[in-house]
Amino acid sequence: EVARIHSNKISFYPPFKSKPTHRISLQNIVHVSKLSRNECPEFPSHHFMAIETLGRTIYLMFKNEKDRDEWIQALTNLSRMPASSPSKSNSNAESSICSDMILMIDDPTDEFLQKPSLWDCKQRRILNCRKFLFNNSHDETFTTFPVKRSASSLVQDALRRALDPIDEVSSEEQNLRAFLDSACALKHADLSQVVDEREKIAFFLNLYHVMIMHAFLVLGPPDSTFKWLKYFNMISYQCSDDIFSLAELEHCIIRAAMNYPSQFVSKFVLPKSHYSFALTRGDYRINFALNCGSPSNPGFVPIYTADQIDVQLDKTASTYLQRVVEFKKSTKGGFTVTLPKVCQWFADDFCNGSNESVLRSVQKYLDPSHQNILSKITWLGDVAIKYLNYSFECSNLMLEDEQEGVERSLSLENEYLEPLKV
Image 1: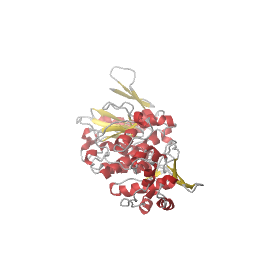
Image 2: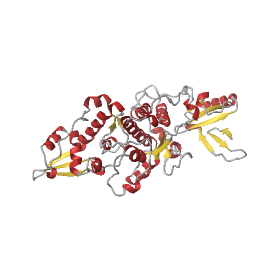
Image 3: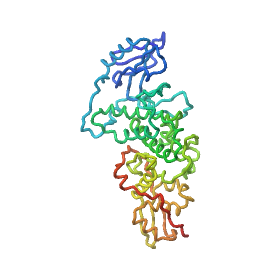
Image 4: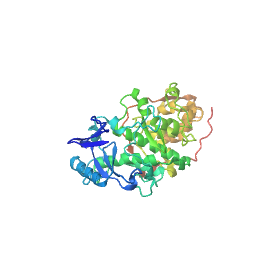
């Protein structure tokens, strides 16, 4: 293949062809660098360099080191951001991941999404595709993707970079690239080594929120209710030698041992894929933990950990329910209780799926005054239950204050309610 540097772009030509197969605009290049031997594919007699844009890393292979170094020097001189001296952002900036950089890209879908040939992708497009995962990157000295780290550590790092990216030392562009690269590192996550169910729940909840933030950051949220299904079936990650979409992660992995939504159509439109690493036990608290950025959910999420997962799920359920549940006394002496829509959609996850079982299941997470009211009611026939509408207008999530979350968490796992009296 022949590559040619122009004043404003690089063009790549197949042998004996005058029409380029690929172009890279010089203004889109954010970094150029030589690759060390352990970062490259197994071609010992060749030399590699990387050309980085926000959404892609293009790898070039040369037969001799001199040609490679000349290219690096030429691109460093021509590109808008020299590899040796990245620009710094204003240290007073509110966030160090700036969506303005994304707006400069003509087609974010083409820049950030990939349809690989290794899998039967159908609607799925891989989002964590900024860097390749070469086979020899399992070398202990490989530093770009630290394979010795656990799956839990990798996903926690990616989520923290997505939710709390402020770093006054680095530029906005560097922080964005660091997040995108941490998402790529999740290709290394080995879920065959994750056997504890608590660790699985923490990992997949964190991964769900990483994917949500990643998609919203580079593509924006779906702008209408009708686009939700296509969006959640398209946005996908490569992880642990497999791929799955947001919809598959939610319904085929996290909720694999739970029930489909109550809407009749959901049984026909939601995916039915099977994954060996899917969760094997249901937990109705997961319904409150999955947060897609809707205003119907809290605007923040914690970073879940295996050793604190029960406390964190209790806290998440309590925060969610105390924020939206309403009690109104009727003129006939009874009460009308308004619950979130997820309690209706996934009612079968709450014991037998009846209104009474849903209300009794969530009782311990309600405001103390509401708990007190329900504790005095032995027959729920006097309680009417309504469900709030769900908003599909999503926005970015924020990181929950971790210290506050620990101090206010509710240790309710050993509490049991009295049997329901009817």
